[in-house]
Image (cartoon, rainbow, N blue to C red; front, top):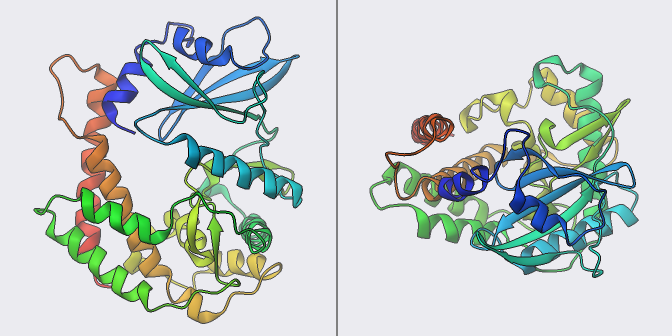
Length: 329
């Protein structure tokens, strides 16, 4: 998301974390007579609201960030997974019976969806037990097992990501261009079949898992894309390897626990695991390009303090990626 778009929406919040913009968008759904409450903004704007006393999630994006069709394709996939028995936050249709509403406001056109709010808790990476690593891997294996039967189009592919990155990166970012070239060459030679390739979550990290007892429910499929299933493993475990492709260690005890849980449901062979460093490097180049876009236009003198701080953190992350691209894998 562009930082300028984030600033514009956050500026609509009052001291109670309520927004007239969010309430305008919420009017397309049945809801109790109380305002939506802001939760966070990253790739999407997230608010909580209540319907018949139950909590739900309102999610929206400016139309310049995502298309209605790609969001609808995401919703179709989540509904498929729910039918297949995967514990996901189910989409909630609007008063007009639509999965996605596109609503014009004084701040522009927004695409809006609503979901169940899953009960449970988020877990911190540094507190996970070996059993929880195993259950995390098992949940991903279950997701991929269900995904093998899905073939509807509408979501981006890894090749689309490569093309987007190549178009976005300035020519001066030579290390990023070289990293993109290297991983594209490597992955282009890797085989694709129904067992190793499908529509992945793309962001199966702990902040998108809501745990009840030892089973997580899954949220935020907004980045789902067509990749090798192994990519979800690489992307999920980025924190385990400090987000560095060169540090991936297939013998790490926590990694072994995760893979053991995954293999409890779905097989994965060594050839797929050997691609993890290249898949993580592609993720990092893609993230780097997204940061380039988010920070386009530069700072303004009247930027709020939170935006100045966020810009500084994102610039530091970009430098981290530049350093990461220089490390051979």
